[in-house]
Length: 385
Image 1 (cartoon, rainbow, N blue to C red):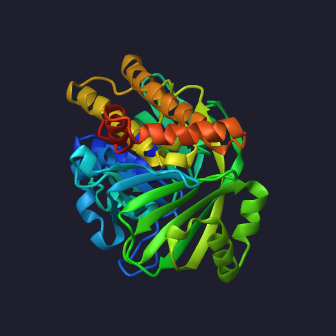
Image 2 (cartoon, one colour):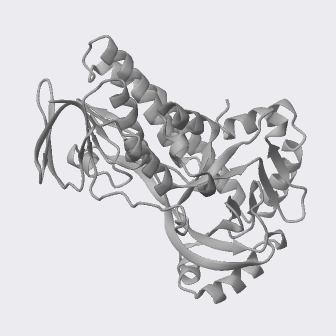
Image 3 (cartoon, helix red, strand yellow):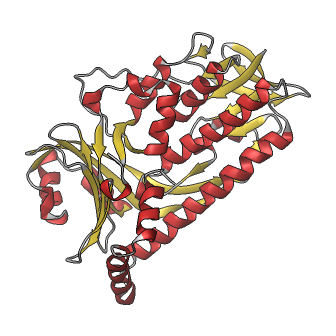
């Protein structure tokens, strides 16, 4: 009998496994496929995240941060937003008295470091296929192609299309946005800028994320058909399109590879059902406009693991309703606030109505001079508030 069985070995699930196992819990970690290994000299994966300072601190606490290769991390000290010829809005580390605001890191690299940090006491079921699930009075049971796995508590961290959430009959509310997102890995003629920037256009944002050395990740939002067409272009053809539609500050570059995904929002109707609890994308997906998705998932994991560790140390039942309700209450409010804020941001900055265009440009100029409010927003974006 396990204390906890975690379904999903991605960044959030693996972090939960490390945290709870380090506290002495007997943990099972289930993952459908073996995580990809990244060599120091291998090419960069398209899927990267902007890891904020709060997430960095937790990865340090778990012992995973030192396992990340320095040559695959890109720190940034400035967050910039601008539209047209208006003056940009900059949030800088120096304004906050910090050395940096966060790092751009490949998702696979973070996952790999967390798997390397898994205590030997974690029993890994990988690859494994989940077949069924049931809850009994004092434990829950997973049916898999490797037999039954029993645990006092189940955690669904198996992503936006969570199979365990579906088996439990937990519904979600949400929608698919009218736009999609193109990711492009490029080589540049200059060392990466220590900033991320986002330019707002009538068709959607264009963004730059630094990667180590003379590399960067470009993000292009537009309607689904347009993004599909761009993704199908040859590298040379895509380069020409980027030069026409990205700001000149991008400079000289060459396309290495590209890929795209639709933008969706979903929020589970409940985070807890008996001895089952949801975390990360299994509980919520968010518009990636400000790169907060993974940070929200880590915040879920940090909150849940802290409550479970305290309960375990006191010898209590890890699936106590009051404990899991505390987790849901805290994280649902925080996640809903961020999701709603991103939706407002998305609607305002994707509108082509002249009054709104003028209003948001004025808003950027006012925000740039907002003093304490600007400082607070910068700290919040960096996970420092």
